[in-house]
Length: 247
Image 1 (cartoon, rainbow, N blue to C red):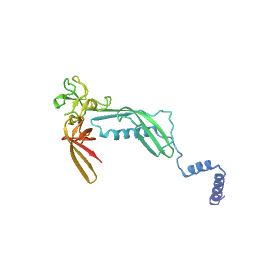
Image 2: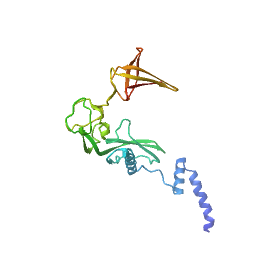
Image 3: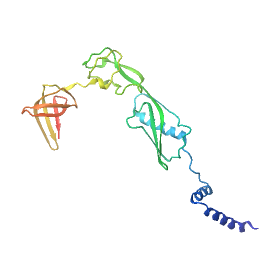
Image 4: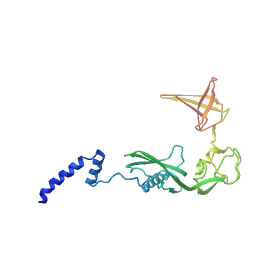
């Protein structure tokens, strides 16, 4: 029989068979007929790549050298292929040390997993160059620069001299001890008993008067004062013996 004559008959038979299938089977058959791929599992290599790229961006503002390693996902993990993935750190997480990196899929199916990672940061930081006493105001000679991995050190380490110079110690330190922000106090710009200038200001007005400080306060800290009329007020201590009250 002529091939041209058979072709319409075969096409009609194929369409009839396709319509007789359930809806899901029809879709599968259509995809196969069109040569499209069926949904696949999410590549584990892609998961790791997303986590590494995210950690590299997060660590880009860290001083020093950064080394990142991310563990492979569990080989038994079978996730639907994702078209919209985003990595994140759990709330309260540090961006370095041993951490967990979350990866969330938003489409076409939603899922969320965590990969274990290690972010090592090697940088300069400062320690006490000699024995230092409580209350001592630091200068450059009191600081010694060292280099090492900072990802395992406590938060708030001193990484530039400007963070420490001019501040006083709240505790004594032995030579070589780590310098941290939480053991340093900014110098007082307002002393208890000092005559201060109290500046009250708001939209369209500013009024200044004198008073007496009731506390020792560093720049930016809350300070209390008593005005010449006997009223007790609170404001923000500023350099030059000024207490600002903002409305």
